[in-house]
Image 1: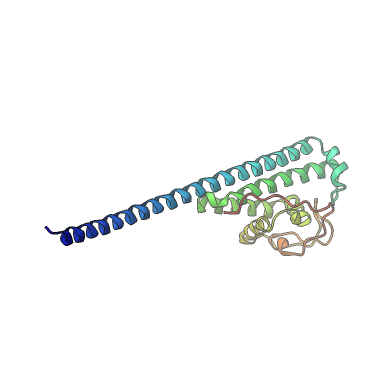
Image 2 (image 1 turned 90 degrees about the vertical axis):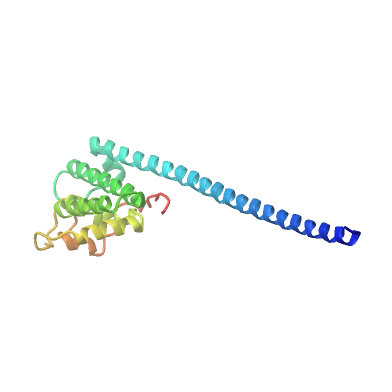
Length: 209
């Protein structure tokens, strides 16, 4: 083979080597991009886990405070003021604290609903809807204090209440835990809520899915 032939072979070989190098670089870039995405996913998962842990701790503390006030309703009255309704204020505050604890429980359901089977979430909605329909105390607490909670939480309870079939005609007579003029019955949740008797306290929501 003459020099020209060897030069052509060398050129072709160099071309193949360049193509091989480009393929190797492309593979490395693809692998690096995959590793970067995985690292970002793990970092986001870690952030979500920390956020959920902080939220859960806050909600458990909130429920613990409600449990304390159930045992000491006289102390609750010093922070929350009088509860609308007829009857002994100690009993009304104990009922109000119980209602608040139940509503706080549903807040955790709302926050983690994306991680629940749909049938399970539907069951929780039916549960809180039935409780709202059956309990004038829980219904009165919600109507007076729904602005304490996030819009997502408000929608969850409003929708669950609306989906519950009524068993009696709504009444406008005030009941224990409700002030005059607040309707009872399944349609009550759609009435404009009365101004809260205490300052609003927006609840912290867990990371949205």
